[in-house]
Image (cartoon, rainbow, N blue to C red; front, side, top):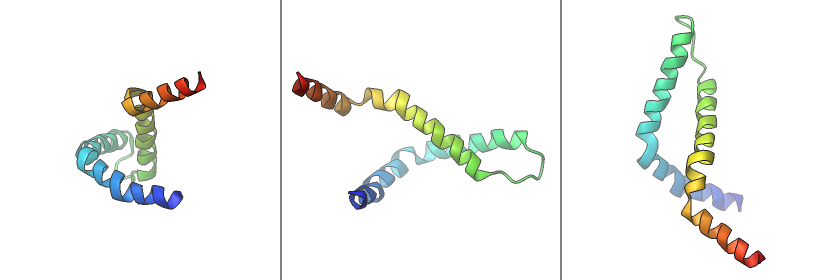
Length: 86
């Protein structure tokens, strides 16, 4: 199953993410880098891992609060599970 999930990720999900949200995500990333740079000592290296961690955590919150609750496919699945349990 893990191999199938990996193939789906590389073959379907990553190309769609690249096509649909790459540009706007880069803009957000660069804005975040600017915020971090403004708080750093001049000439100090930016820790890309910290910036990536912030962005990934925010994306997870975004998925949990904005995307997953609006998924029509999940709502249908939950409804069918409730019917089966009744």
